[in-house]
Length: 207
Image (tube, rainbow, N blue to C red; front, side, top):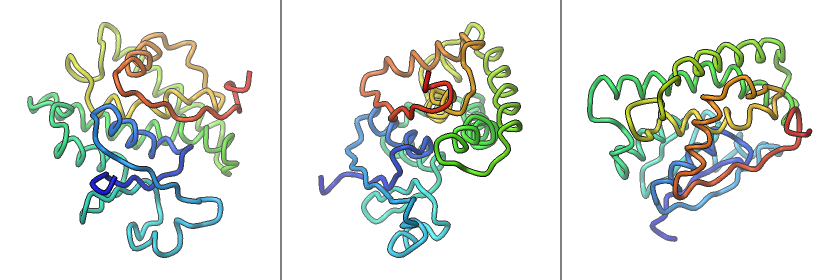
């Protein structure tokens, strides 16, 4: 796999999973390198030479290093799978809107809620629940009558949406009230090449 893209990741990170998911869906040759977050490997060399911020995921594509999961999605799509970013300017703007949504509402909502239950993060569970409910209520209405977040085929917006939404129950965030959201998750899971992130039996996922 000498020509493979290297994905430095933690296997239970949704930010990392969205990168691996996109590579798998698009047939990009990749290998994963697990970073031992529990022992602080991400805060030491040689990892800090890749990302001085000490965060995963990071990809190495030959001599190119890219950090931040959404930036990585844009990079990989532009270079290897341009059909995953719409050519129409209005639709491309919508894609970037949902990348920002993933970095904002989804990160502060279901991602934060899951950090509490899976990793023991000292965050405000009540706030994470409230943000999650607002985010999924918005998405439920937005998706009414739509198959994908943008346009008529999957884009990197759907990939960015997937991981923390699918695993929201691990953070005690129920997806039962949101049939349109669950239907989009199912469509993504039915795509050729789909790879799942391991389920952690905590929160509602423990039931």
